[in-house]
Length: 573
Image 1: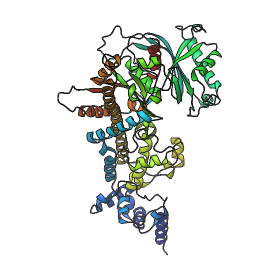
Image 2: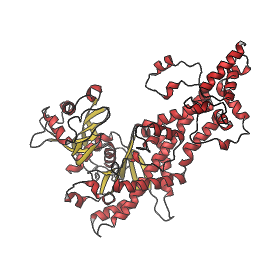
Image 3: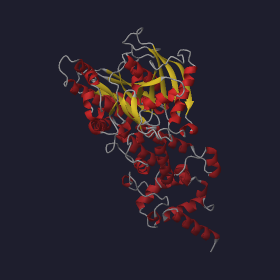
Image 4: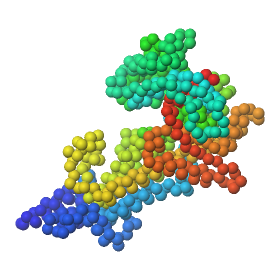
């Protein structure tokens, strides 16, 4: 047997073990063989040529959902008699693949389909308002700031990576035209702020040790602030503190709540589970010689809403879109199931027409979101499938993972990167770039077409994300308008709560405060999201004589700290 014959047989066997069809294996051998002119061509080029020669095949038969791929994971994929359909798919043109990806990601982002999706969101929001256990949760904030609140307030923002402590000064809007709601102001400013890293040592602190660490950082900040003397707090007049807390909590009042498991590797609640966070922080501060009382506690989306409503009086929602996503919305009290409010005073009920609601919008969308095969793969591989459908399609935690799955599909089935990819890329991304290059050297040099394809895939994923976020904001805005109109009628004529809700239903301009790395920093994300939102709002006009309305996205900088301070100011005023 000649060397060529041996090489031929060995190559065929290797290819079959990897899940290639017989015909694909033969073509691959002669493509790589030095005895053929095709050896001088890159794999992607050969694949493209073959795909072009197969134009007579019925492309409409190419499946758009999950189908077996020659990845070696299935014994059936190694069968010599693979169908011609699978063969055509495996040798498809990269341009065809990108066209399919564009259709799967963007065909559902037109105005008609997004309006239909928003209706699906609204139905799920309505159900969650009444019965949801982990979403549509009412806070204790039943009023938004007037903009006239003033004073200096101690605020803290406890996140998964950092603790920030600041002295916030609110000067009010007394020197501004109330109608001027668009320009940045000096109505709220940070006088002193310190940032403390939550490293592995801090994460390992158990129980009171963690909260004593927090108290020590508060003390350190106060020592650096001449505006607040260390003895300003006393047992008769403790120094009030407002806290933005980015962890689960069973809130029982504006300034208290039972500690729940914090997650994120933190051990702070060990031995303290179920205890009141207000009492825990007060005790921890006392160990540092501080007399401090926790007066307000809120999550990041509520803080975002409150911070911007201080300077933009038309703000009714707060959007967080970074690693995760959430929205806080100011909704009629009567729209929320009464059992969700727990035990609240009669004075609270007498005053409250609306309440800031933590929507946990990340959990919406099951059964109504248009899923691609890559979304299905991601969902199936997740520890909690179907738990956060919207978040898994829009947030920073998952956008890169969706792109990665599409890219691997393109490599395996459309010749991207010459059809070669180390298996490890689909299993472990924790290694550094330098280690990756050392362990998995590649002889293939990416072409301009490869890079353009990656960019195109990323643009599809992100454009879909911005459209879905716009649809969720629109759905909440539309729902809020409808509920305000409905629940205004539940109060008697002349009741100020009825008048408040009637004004809300007729609100012409609504501002949505936002922050988060995705919406703030990803190129064109904000612009795309705003454009889609504007089109949806415009399409909601059913009559020509109906007044035009607008929904505007407005950035809320340092919203956790400002929002915490403003929550405290609202309570005091």
